Length: 563
Image (cartoon, rainbow, N blue to C red):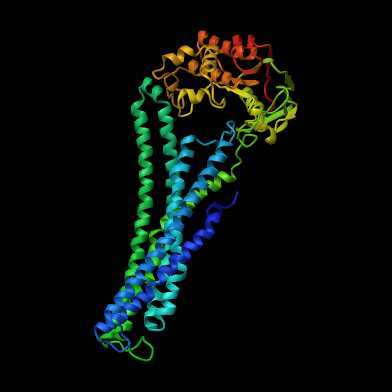
């Protein structure tokens, strides 16, 4: 694996690359706006010189005020223009990173043992990726200004007036980047730890919410609360560590900036009083020159101060980019195809496997015997737990890629080019149904398009689920939540059978559809599946249930997996 810091920086650079031109335009406008302070300072110096009667080259105070205001309006306009470009670029980067992350995770196989919890993905896509915005809005513009503005002010404006002030700026200025680099190592480490804590806390909260009923039944509320409190306290500690470093770095760097400005002020003051006779070219420093360099000193340090204030934004962005880079480099198991809608694959709904083997997330190799399933057939796959029944169904649905061998569907190999079209002909009934955050009607008709009420009622009747819907407070408008709150496990599976009926699939894959159900509920689920099979759908079930297996037309018993 590549070195983590380098990988994080490369990933951050790749994220910014699509909007680099836009950021460069914004940076150019921001630098120009910042450099307009030089003529503004010159106008003020000449105006005050005129007010105090300091020489023939002084400006009329009212003219100076007018010029200063015009330059200020121009500067404000350029700043606003630069900010607009930067905001648009930041939004584009965050939106692109989120879309890329969601697309990658949607293609990750459910058989991937390293698949992160949905709460961790949500934290990364929502909260963590948002950390890229301050980096682009504050740190990047400050970085561009630091590379240009101090040098131009020192060389083009201050040096022609006073070499002593130039030396003061050249000594004090470089100290700020040096200390920023020293602080940067600790800042990044603290930000990385904080980002990890954020993801873990979100995952822990989701787990506790999913197990809320069990927690109450086991009277484990105190333990659950204490565990969550400990995790929250850990996040608090990490966040405070980041803030301490941010405040400490800002304080130290503000100190150097203040000392630099103070030294310039001391020199100018003594020079104007006649106590110091060196440091200016040819003639002693006069009032206009003193005011000019004194006004430029804070502007010299301002980009450095801005960069210091935004240094922790960079640390947070690099930490997020490092997490994205780690996901990129991990060997994630992905589903076949692109996970997009496709026209159904033509041909007979026949399935055949030849020499099929698979490496489990734990590193164990599973091999299956060759077999074929004819269109309209019903097949039970039996065997002890861990033998590979669920993995086989995943391979038949293109939800995972085999290590060796071939799955043929509709007389063509199941591969990236055919998987989406093959899944358009499939129905799935799992052991743990999941529902979208939408009405029951939307969940039932998912993938079936617009469905007439009569057809919906027919599908519910086929699955013996009509009374389930009738009992819900809002009927088909009920929202059951991801885990199906408000219905039992058996009722949720009957609803999934109804959903499969509405899709009119050619092949139904059912993974332990009757597990943990009482005999009556299991019989209802079985009858629903058999009615779909009687309607012409091929039915393949992975099961431990001998009663369900006995109702299938054929059985395949898997032997112990190969070493």
